[in-house]
Image (cartoon, rainbow, N blue to C red; front, side, top):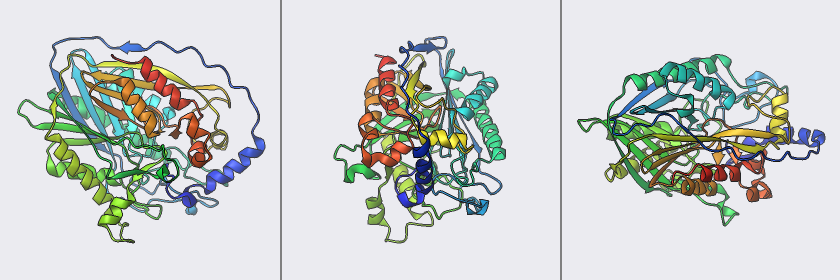
Amino acid sequence: MNARRPRRGRLLIAMLAALVAGCATAYAPAPLAPWEPARELGVLAADDELRVGAGRADISPDHAVPLAGYGAFLGAPEHIRWSRGVHDPLYADALYFEKGADRLLLVTFDLVGVTAADLDPLRDDLARETLVDRDRIIVSSSHTHHAPDTLGLWGTGFPPRSGRDERYMTFMKRQAVLAAKTAVANRRPAELLVAVGADAELHMNIHDVHDPQATLDDALTVLIAKDRRGGTIATLTNWSCHATCESMPNRLVSADWVGYFRRGMAARSPGQHIYVNGAIGASVQPNDHYRDAHIRPGEDQNFRWAKLLGESLAEKTAALMATARPVPFDRIEVRRTMVPTHFENTLYDLAKKMGILSMRMPKMGEVYRIEATAVKMGPVRFGTFPGELIPNLGLDIRRSVGGEAQVLVGLSQDYLGYILDEQRYRDPRYGYEKMLCVGPDLGVNLVRAYAALGFE
């Protein structure tokens, strides 16, 4: 969700919050249950050949749908931000790893986010169709603000009307399974390489104007799978930035700068190019200063800014690939745990009761548990989190999972909005993010969970 244009994104939230303020009740938070031990999954096998496959399926809607990410709408359905065509396609991308008896499947969508209420049955379907253990399946979203509303928040508030199009949701999930089956079918012997760099030029933390401790996670990581002839099967790039170059007036379906990034990568290297977003919370946005240095004021619409950012990141990533080194590993280790957090969001509670929001939620004050998944492939580590994590917590998770290269997969396994630390949760300057955060303890509990899941 976007905190960059507050007047356009907060009207409904403010009105709902006002309603909630009158009906909120006091409660005593339940004590957290003891930490569950990390569970290691899968059969281990040494000295087996690595195979990698990639697949892609178009998930662009073929009819008008409410678009997610900007705005708050009241009254008649025509007030909703209905799509008016497709500027560039949305995709479900899948990347499959197989080594001996070990499997790992990554699926990522060009969507604003998908909650566990949809992802849990989807992962069951993916497991059944690909024969990959569902606990070894990671599903995430890029957080583009120009894709169908998969959460329900961008219908209308008064009267309450969800923005979800169930016909589209069914189609999107079916296409994800198609992409995954294609990736498995396309698997072939591979070598995995990794390159690690950084880029702070293209993104910014909008809170740095008032919070001297506001941080950025500048890490730029790219994994490269090559076949026996040295050809590129696929790349997986991880960086952190909202996909919000185009603003609310746009009504064309688009992956925003992520789509231009993939095209820029394809122009520089063969293979399928996949992007997963990282710690974008609080709120890490495209850098306006970079835009203004390259595009004259008033000329950032019509996707010029999205094109500039995507192609610039592709150029930097392609240059980084020249420094890639082999990744030695003999197993794909996967560990997971369920992370507890107290549910304290009265806005989410009301939106759920009004039939707007698709999330699965406990009663106020009760404990909600979300999944954290860690992966180790030699010096490469993965870590998931279910929303828009603030960068300082992302940096903590990097340290917890260890290794020489980390892929932090944001908006994955669930979508719970912003994930703050307790200091910023209590800070009135982060009031917008707090309204879209399930509670104050999720961030610190995620960091604790990854420390407990450590591979070292």
